[in-house]
Length: 120
Image (cartoon, rainbow, N blue to C red):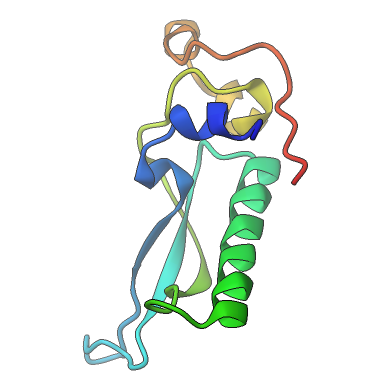
C-alpha cells in the first residue's frame, strides 16, 4: 500500500513510454510489440521498479489467463526528453539529469528530499 502515494503523483506517461514496433517498410510487426522509450529524468532505481511491476503484471496475467494479454514490451535503448513529474522523491530522478538543470528548474520539480522505498 505504500506505493499508492507514489502512483498518485504520476501520469500514465510517467510510468513508462512505448511505441509500436515497425519493420523496415514501416509496417507494424505482428504480434504487436511495443518498444520501451526511456525518459531522461528517470533514475535507474525508478525505471527498474516500473519494469519489475510490468513483469509482475505479465506473470500474474499468465497465471490467471483472463482478459486481454498485457502488451509485449521490448527495451529500445532510446532515451527521450519529456516533461518530468513534480513532487517525487529524490531517488526517482536521475542524478545525471538533475545535475544539468538550472536552479529554478530543479526548484519547480518540488523534489521530496528523501529516498523512496522501492521495495515490493
